[in-house]
Image (cartoon, rainbow, N blue to C red; front, side, top):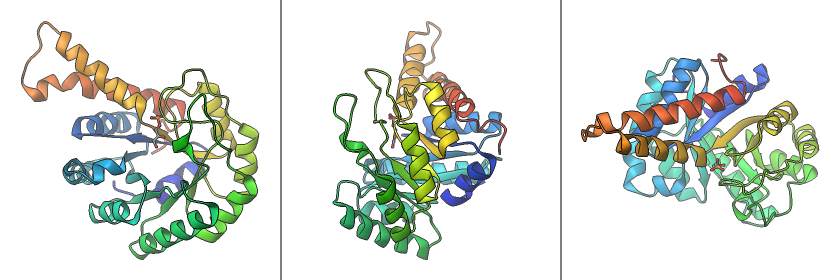
Length: 278
Ligand code: 13P
């Protein structure tokens, strides 16, 4: 069933678990995630990067995601990830998104607040909840970290903007980590306490399991997984190519990538304790 961002995060909040948010890129990666969610009886978020929304692929894929969510027996949210401006937000809303992330973290604090609040106003007019970001996750990697999210600033940001959940910088980064990250769990607790809303952990590919569990305990209710989806899909594709009995028929060729994404999604669903929670 198609649900919105707040509804799905509220489930996690009540149940004390975390909803996995998978970045999907095509119909087959979405099918892998949905197959896993159905098997695991888990709520999931299917999210797409803004570049997809700005290209034809977003137009086609959005129809697939909405149809898949409606058909699913488990709660599914279709979410825009890292929307950089109102243009991508409007496009995502028009294609049926039920969750929006507006990422104003490149802007100075006050400007981030003003721009995020504007997006919250637009989205609330059509009943779509918004995820905000404080601390610029997009600018960091293993070697270059930016200033972590400040708990007092997070409280002010949440109060002024009305976002329903907040992405924070606490030692996480996008892409595979060269060395295991060391998440600042005390900071998660402090942000959570002061801001009072569910938190979002970006860069979920490669965070050691025990740190993911600690972050959930401290108040993370949505974890993004992108790079691992790509790696699973690529491996499944190679397996198809290397299979001596492979079929060139595209639907059959795609079975292994779909299965690989499904297995990855099942692992992450277990990790974030969403298994059986639908
Ligand atoms: P990873 O690619 O590191 O899993 O991060 C995904 C993400 O946070 C998307 O917003």
